[in-house]
Amino acid sequence: MASQRLTSELLVQATSGGCGWLAEQAAQGRLLADYVSLRRLAWAHIFGIISGETSEDWVKALEVGRKRYNGLLEDYRRESNVKALDPNVCNPLARNSDNPFNKMQANDELLKEIWKDVERTFPEVEMLSSVDSRKMLQRLLFHWCRATNPAKAACDSYRQGMNELAAVMLAACKWGEYAEGSWETPEALGLRLCGRQHTEADAFTLFSRLMDMGLRPMFMPTSSSATSPIGGARNSNSVIGELPRSRLGGGSGRDLPPSSAILARCMFIFDTVVKRSDLALHKHLLKLEIEPQVFLLRWLRLLFCREFSLEDTLLLWDGFFADAYKPPSAAPSWTYPEPAKGGGEMAWREAAEASAKMPLVDYVAAAFLRGMRGDLLGLDQTDCLRRLLSARPPACGVGALLDSARRLRDCAASMSLASPAVGADAGPLGGSNMAANFGSSLDPFSSRPGQGPLGGPPGSRPLPVADVGAAGGAGNFNAPPRGQHLLSAAALGAQGLFSAAVQKISEQLPPMEPTLSSGSVLGSTDELRRRLVQAEQERDTIKRKANEFVTAKRAEWASQVNELKAQLAQRDQQLAERDARIAELEAHLRQASEALRSTADVSSVSPAPALVAQAAVDLSNGLLSDSAEDEETPV
Image (cartoon, rainbow, N blue to C red; front, side, top):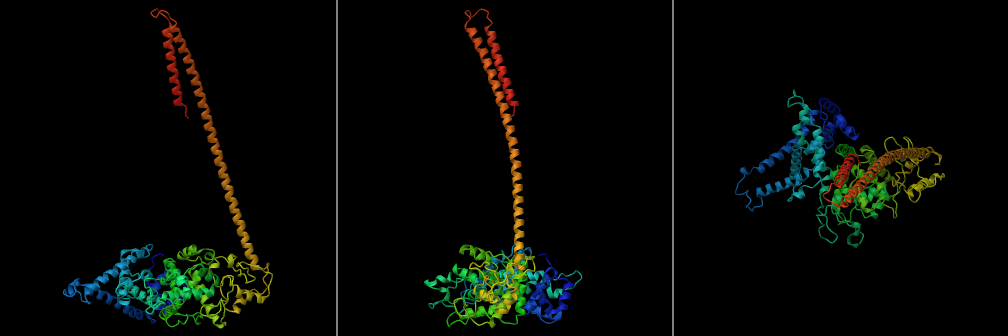
């Protein structure tokens, strides 16, 4: 994302539009491009930090949080000033409980614990990876832990993941810094509202409000009342609970109460929202003994900031916060259960409060999980875990994911009119698991930009629920009665989305009975045929080019082989000629030797020595000429 700054023109537009206009921009996902710098003010209004319609009211409201943060900074400086303290009290050897040295040592441990995560937070974002930004992030986390979440041990006060939440808040504040001009005085409205000198304090205030919106209990390993079934304290070191629940104690361990709010919330999302919206996926994960907290814990604690890029995370959080600021008119029918006495009351209550403060998060988690159902249903336990722990952002975008979650929640609210079902498929809190295939009406992952449902052309309607086969594929489309569509939808649920109401199903059905000649079926079939023909053409083109390449290379290699064979034949001929010359010279030499031996008088004058000398010279010249030819002839 390009670095954006708050300009005077945008500031005038924001102040004239008021707080309601800022919240509307966030709710509609419009804080993009130049409007990115308005997110700092929009979130401050949604969190209740600023109110009123005038800019001066906003400045006064922001000053409250800034004074609080500056007070925390001053208190820390005063505590760290060793020279101003009594040396008889503040020293490593003093054993009194209020020794300031012990507090200073705890502060140092907390700073070191925070820095371990801060130095690796969003390394790909240049703005957050600078030394100044990391120091700023460390300070605001440190002072939040000291002021809001104090503990004896640093690992209990600060927990991994808080750094990423605070970093997103810091990024929103940095992108919202006012781009002051050289002519402006420190009293200018832009500098008082969003000046660079207030970025750290404003990020601290936003982070504090975020943690108050149900996220603080998500980082607590146990609730205050969590006890084990045998009366002892539950294991506080296990952040995600005992795994797997189905193997505990040799029995069904799923009946054990949750030991923390995060576990209770994971159980509610998986055993209620996911089960009622996609029973097939719920049964599949249950069969593989994949516990929901394994993948939901990170999604809920970090609000999906590891699954999405920073830019998409900001847009996703816009939807979360704006939805919390303006809740839906109808309350969802899926609520938390009433825990039995001694069954984790505190954990269930904290989880329910967290869900109520940001209700859309639970349904986004269910929609995000359902977007992977096509992969998960065909994988074993190991591959399912790998897919869940490396979840990728949906190709449809953040906006479609938020819309799917809202429709899922609206569907849950409408089910409050239906009578509860009793049976094996009933939800854990009562209510019906009636499922029907709504095509892409509740599922943004079934279509892509430029395509209709099921990959058909834009504008095509989803296939109606018909006689669905046992494997979930399309069965007989021979125009069954209209009522049979409702029965099939309620009984089978091909895609796993439950029925909101009979009227909703009727709206999805075409006025004519579905046949093979219907426009939607033919449109989808024609599209598939067109893609198949295109794929076959591409395959033939690739095969033709490959054959041409192989043919050309074979011809080139054959030419090179023939040339080498010709050179070898020429070389063999030269060697034969040399061997013949050597044999001829050797014959001359033997004749000269025989003539020399046949001479009776060694001292007499004889032509034999002359013949021997001449033969030796001829032999030497022949060998030399052959050697020269060998050097000139290439192999």
